[in-house]
Length: 202
Image (cartoon, rainbow, N blue to C red; front, side, top):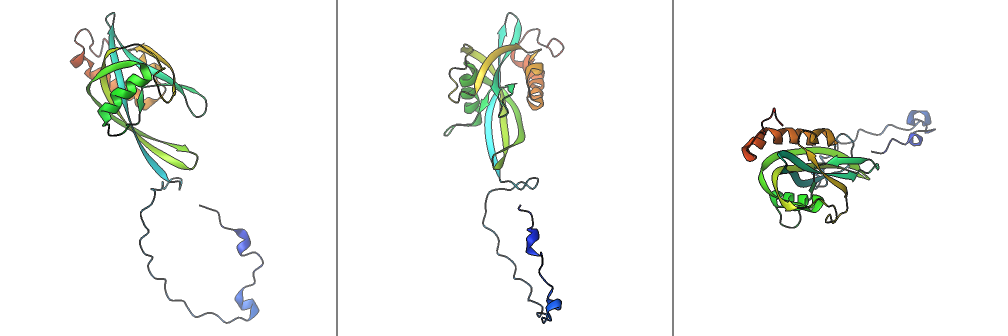
């Protein structure tokens, strides 16, 4: 919202100083017609808000008796390297599950099958002239093939990819909301990966 123009009242004499008659009271304004629907506006900043949806998740493999998670690194808008879970926008008629499988494979090189949903997280960030409210739907996947690579990422956002042990992945991830998704996954892993994978062991 623009700030008031202080020059609007600078040096303007009051009507009483000029001997001007007072205007009769004006009729109250008519109620304004409802404004047409437009972009949603954030009350906090006054900027238009754009809604975005992504899907991705935690793809896990068993390796020498341990469980490992594929995570990616990318640079944020400020040029800082951040480690995060693979994710991206649905394309065409994809649902969240289909988008999650495709995005995980594109960004990590690892194909996977969905075991179950892990819920969603949402957060806000600001770009040039609007705020973005982003919701990310996460799934737990079992790795079925492939090799680690970022070469298949069409957006070239991922600059590195790594297998990280389930005990260490929360410390590697840059964002607290993704660390909470990992904590949730750890609690349900024994249902999908039989063996000594109890929460105490993990």
